[in-house]
Image (cartoon, rainbow, N blue to C red):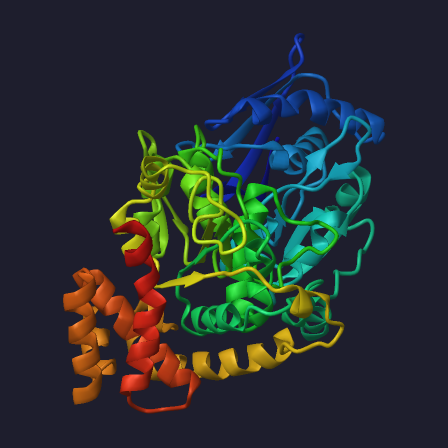
Amino acid sequence: MITKLYSAALRGVDALEVEVEVNARNSENPGVIIVGLPDAAVRESSQRVTSAILASALELDLGIKTVNLAPADLKKEGPSFDLPIALAMIGASGTQILETDGFCIVGELGLDGMVRPVKGVLSIALEARARGRKFLIVPEANAPEAAVIEGIDVIPIRNLRQAWEFISGEKRIAPFVLDRRAFFESHRTYSVDFDEVKGQQYVKRALEVAAAGGHNILMVGPPGTGKSMLAKRIPTIMPNMTEADAIETTKIHSISGTLDTKKGFLTTRPFRAPHHTISDAGLLGGGTNPGPGEVSLAHHGVLFLDELPEFRRQTLEVMRQPLEDGHVTISRAAGSLTFPARFMLVAAMNPCPCGFYGDVKRQCRCSVRQIENYRQRISGPLLDRIDIHVEVPLVDFKELSSDVVTGESSAVIRERVAQARQIQVDRFKSANLTTNAAMGAREVRSCCALDAEGKGYLEHAMEQMNFSARAHDRILKVSRTLADLAGKQSITGNEVLEAIQFRSLDRQLFE
């Protein structure tokens, strides 16, 4: 007897439906044969499945069970096929004909028959809905994640016997219900706030501009000035993610196994801060079975690189393409996978190896050659892709010790940023863009026209500071964001001057 169920395999950030077919036949030498390009974890499922069926006191005929995972040319990875394989084996061992066209099933089995959570359930739910499946059977811990997708009933399962009773019609299980709006609102909270930062008003202004336009930013200053503290608070002033953005971001975290199963969904913008010892594959993505890297895990959020010159130069250079294109393509012999990587780069560094170059209170111990070598670890092309450069000075004692809250809260700043972002969304409706930072050459020409005063300021800056053509466009983009924050239709000389000031620091430090 042949039994067929449906599951799904992950490929990149998406899922593809897989048919799980089981044929049982009598034999003196019982066993399980799994075909259909399974990896080691899938092949080992035969031992877990057999033990789980017996522990659940369910029927399992002796003999050979052939398990086929179709399509046969799609590689099947991970333990998520345990549950559908077990259910199909039980069905093939009995005489009951199952009506399984409406089910999509995923889950890992323990030897005692308990069902464990798996990765990529959000992508699987989207694929099941697209295929017209009515029910998605998932481990109980994955139910909140899957229930975010409307149009399919999510059935939470604790063990194998419960799953069998449901698909065989012996027992009814109520679908998991999620109040999406209430869920989003209740989880959109941060543990930090901008009003906790003393001083640094100029830096806060630069971060507000960066968040408003989606611009990359570099902070330069001695140790202890608050660069990391400021960076961690940038997501709190960025506009709230839309449901579509949240689903796209959660898919990436789900397939990488970094999603918190207790929360089940990302409703706040991700903040990723990899250590400077990270490899190229860890930052960009890759591996034998390619998975997303830090640039993709920071999609729709912030990628913070602290101590930027300490990263290997080759590792930093691989970011140049995703910074421009907003995605990463990883090519292997078996094919290519593309991961989204539209993130805001926030970098921090000291002005020299000891950190005190230019400090009026502490003396720098570095030689001129040491300082030059330190700064040259960052290439000019990478610097050109960072729109804003800002110096972070030390905060004086009076301001640091004051109990008076002088800075604005994240909510107040976020409101201004959201208004500026909405202006950009309305402006770029036909161009499929959402931020000024993503503008191409055509959009820059049409949206960043300057008056005579602004052109004069920009021409003088280009001649005196030797800016590149890319830096020229970056200045125009930042000027456009400054005008949006001020609610202006056109760019004036004041916006150009402030944008030039946000670019001038790199020439002072790296020339």
